[in-house]
Length: 468
Image (cartoon, rainbow, N blue to C red; front, side):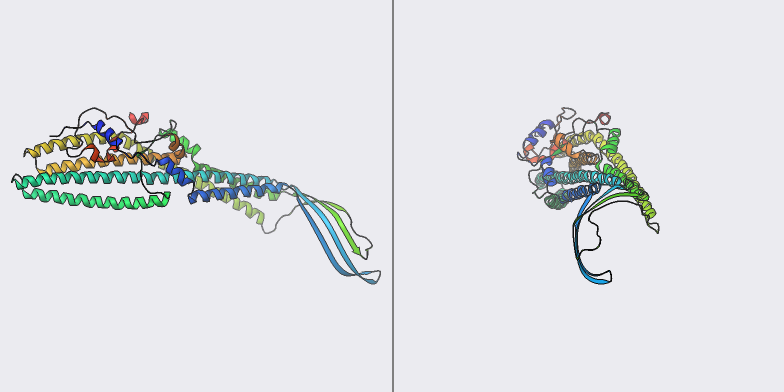
């Protein structure tokens, strides 16, 4: 009978065998954000809104123009026909002094559109960071599950050798050997499916990051202190979410467009200065204008209701933008609540999942001893063995679920990139709830187990309401 290793020592030894050169998640995210086409597109749209803002601001300045005209004409002067050549040059300065605040409201609208584009760029960064995080976490999960399947196959092969010896000695039925072979085929089939899923995930990861999926670490995220309960998250969603902020700014831009459209109702006051620079008329006319200045006050009302229709259009567009914002706010609020509850349940059940691993390990070890003594059937041993590895797999999946849900919550409130900088660490380690000696595997040493055992580690510093 082999000595039963301490679970915490087993985990520490296993983590020490992890790759020394790992690709941490924050570094991968930063590299992807520097070259992802969605980021480039959002940046280009932001630059376009800045250019539009400059265009609108230029409406406040006067326009200056030079014109030159040359003409040949046959004039009649005192009953005599004269061929006259005329050459004139003018300088014109036009300045709109008042147009019902149309330009001011267009400038406000352009400013809100620029702010919305800034928020869209921020949202694109958060969205791509989440996409990379999910791809990274899925690769880690699949590799841990695949190593778990490899370990299970190794134990079944060791068990088959033991059963074969007993069959040859006439101690057990040959049907037990067939049962072991059937279980091995089933596990290898599952292993093949995992390899296929892993291959697809690695390909998507390479397409997304431009890197090979090598030396990945086991990621973990801690939420900021002000984002750990549902009320805090809802408040941050209202104030910090890039998507909601962009929607609010677009509603403000549509409201400014309504005021700009209504500005057409007001008269337009324009100042125009026209200065004659050059005049050469051959032969000279009896009289001509050499210098002039003109001040005009114009009011134009388009017929057919164009102005009123334009105001109606901007009003409806503002209503549509507000409805879209309300819909988005309702959806994000609902998604945030659902994610929070799912994360809370995953955190609450994690200690029990770890305890289940310890319990099934003890049961499996006891059944192996009883099987050797002829008091347990092979079916009992195989069943407990499958249960133990299923428990390990549930811990792996639970830890991955916590990581992904935490990342999604942080992305919704615009804090994922910040948390990757200040709240990220690899392979969080905490001691088990008790120091009870358990058998991690009578046939599996720490060196053979692979990094899937890191998934047994409970996450540290849970929020108060979750711990309670």
